[in-house]
Length: 137
Image 1 (cartoon, rainbow, N blue to C red):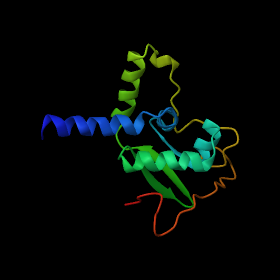
Image 2 (tube, rainbow, N blue to C red):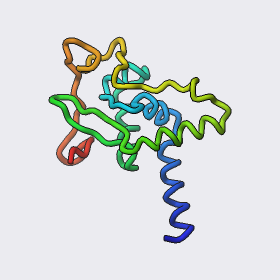
Image 3 (tube, rainbow, N blue to C red):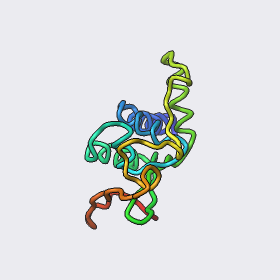
Image 4 (tube, helix red, strand yellow):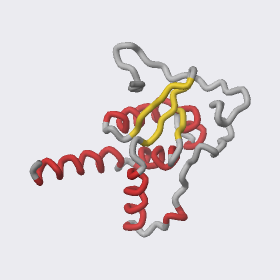
């Protein structure tokens, strides 16, 4: 690999996570996983907005997904991504203690996913066969 192609790969990764909303999603997922309804309640953003950012993170190979019944849970494919965010925070003068990481044990008021609600009635993400929202391989 040439230095130019290496620089392009690094640039693509940094570009994919550079938007504040995507960083918030990565921090919310943390070392665990989260469905869209959980991210919606946690971040206070609309489902469509979060899904668009998840799609970009998925296409960049940063986020993966798994299905559990009607729910699709997103997770970081490589935990080093969080380390990269922590290093960036350090460079920006933000202590790691100021960052809020989500965990599997984080229960969010208003979330109806099985992790947060006894009813466990998470609204499924809508997708079409022509363009599925997740790669469940």
